[in-house]
Image (cartoon, rainbow, N blue to C red; front, side, top):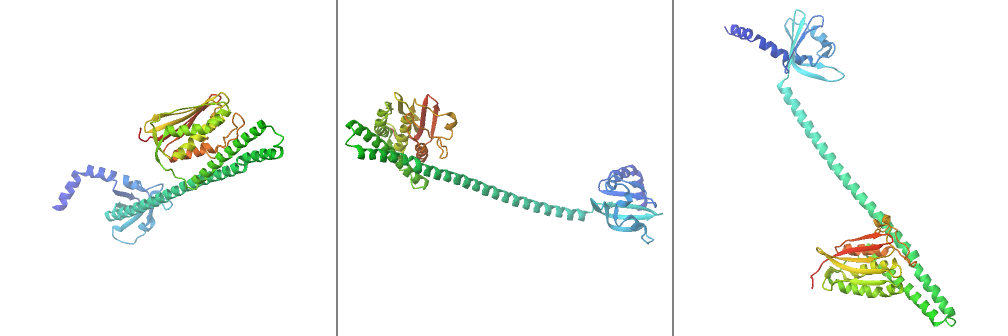
Length: 389
């Protein structure tokens, strides 16, 4: 009765079974003739066959299966390897039947096989993830090392430029004023009794000017050297901006008078800044001295301030030679080499601007320049505001 029921069910659902087995992607069915011809293969099994289907039975091979000596219809049960030795092959849990010389292969995906494969894949994925993480860590480490090397190279380049600039100034710019002093003093020693008072006065003025230039340059050199060694730190306090501006004007007035330049200052006495007084004074002195150097007779240099949010902006403006556009971007760099002779052939090193930038930034400000050739220059820098009053 049970067998009849099964047969009845199979007969009733024959079309559905046929369709399912033909299109199934989990169960493979293949039927071979005694002469190795593929009589039938469903969709799943066809995916393993390429060219001569019987040759795609790798282990056991088609010939080994047909040669098995047994009276049983089921001649093989186990993993059957299908595919191609030279590329991809797959093992399926299969049963092989032999009847009238024909071979019927029914195989499918084994659950335990899937579990093992999934575990293997999971393990491989985990190992790949670990490798990727390790590669990323090494990549980041290499990038950090490269960044540090680049920073060190840039620092080394700057140090070399600093050294070259330092020796250039000592060997040339600091030597010139002393040569002038030696030459003029030698002339005075040899001819003092022959020179008129006016000529002696002229020599004295020239010697004073050379001595002042040498002193200012030496002072800048010493301060710059201290900055490079990290020994010079600002002593920040509330400083009256107007007082420092007037002091700088007084220091530079003789140089302005000697070139017949109008030196003017405009400032509010009530403004104070949080600054190092000597650094601020040196910065202004260098900028005003530069402005006078590159301004012709009858020209004008003006120093003024204006409030700029939380900073006080200082400006040193002149109507002198101006600066070529191609020099502006590197004006404050140690290897800029943008120093030129003044309107009366005054020598310059460019060190004053570099020192000014160092000082301004150490006090929490910034410095920049606007200039046009033959129309003059405006040097601006900011210092944090203190209490007004």
